[in-house]
Image 1: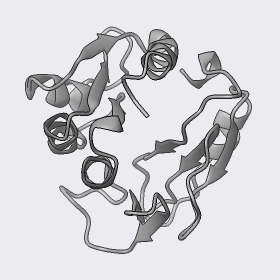
Image 2: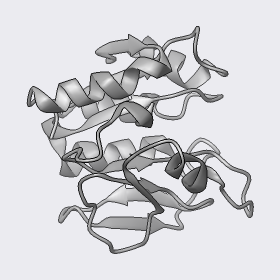
Image 3: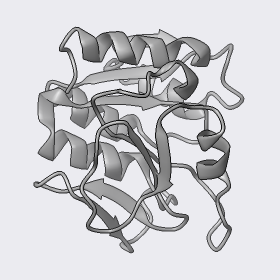
Length: 172
């Protein structure tokens, strides 16, 4: 998905991955090999910069604050998840509003569905991975069931769709 996003992408990309507490995520190094974007673990207090992919550390919530600084929170899991896509998406709805664009990808459970509703209510855009390309359709399926998803796409088409959305001014 990230491989089709150009290196000069004008926005930061924030990623939440569900991992067992205490495990070390290999996602930053895996993503770094498949994209021209800069990829790094998110750090508390840093400003989210364009063209950078920030991956939430295992067992901490990743949110964006009012000044577009990243915050890592050790607050309680939400629906058994920390980090939680719902927590991230709700912070985007609150502080980025209609300029937010969120994507719900393959995963078990319903994490991301409530956050997708919050983003849509704030005027943002929501995409979800289609069932055929998802290893686990729980998360994207739950988001789709909310009725707030603008586009349902195969994973291989999401990066290009996001780039077009941003280029057209539909997300910032």
